[in-house]
Amino acid sequence: MDSLFDLRGKVALVTGSSRGIGRSIALRLAQHGARVVVSSRKAEACEKVAAEIRSNGGEAMVVPCNISDKAQLQALVDATQQAWGRIDVLVCNAAVNPYFGPSRDIPDDAFDKIMQCNIKSNHWLCNMVAPGMAERGEGGAIIIISSIGGLIGSSLLGAYGISKAADMALARNLAVEWGQAQIRANCIAPGLIKTDFARALWENPDIAKRATQGYALKRIGDPDEIAGAAVFLASRAGSFTTGQTLVIDGGGMINMQSV
Image 1: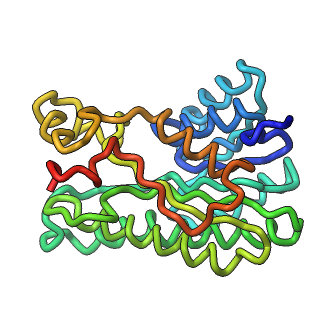
Image 2: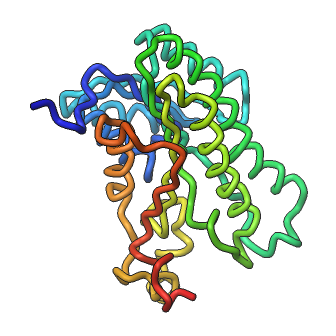
């Protein structure tokens, strides 16, 4: 019996995949058989991930890209199509958060950067990839890495949370617009994960303890614990799942102690 999680023959494009959650997703998609496009701003960092995939018997290529630049996003899609002829799985993982503090005080340029990179770039990229998926007639999977910050208010991460809530809405709308072509679009909303992106929240043990005291599991997560969900959503195992936001937060959102 073929595995529900078999991705052999699939091509997966993962943005922000040189480190953290994106890296783990790229590695695990490759482990399950996908050919993976590793992409972030710095080619050298991407090459390290691609080399790791190849050393484990997988296939990977590197296409550097600044997600805030529409032309670079189109070049990323075009390079993938030219090399491998298709994109079956798109993971929009790259995101920014240049401001930490009350949203009432956020400078306009920081707010604009968050919205540009975390929402508009995902909108652009998804709509660059989806038509090709539809044309092949084999469906496809779009996965947007959101955050539990899109489900709650915050006195320090308000603008970031707004962008992540918008990503959830983007996935729902993509699911409706492209569903007839069997293209599925979903979000993953991680809680606190041990990545460089969230370093300020976990490298200090006292801060980490306070941040996770409302989590049912009483710990921060690992990037691999997000990658497993991405494999599910990318594969036949998730073939009837679309328009959803999968919360993976160690039980933070369901625990009354976190309120």
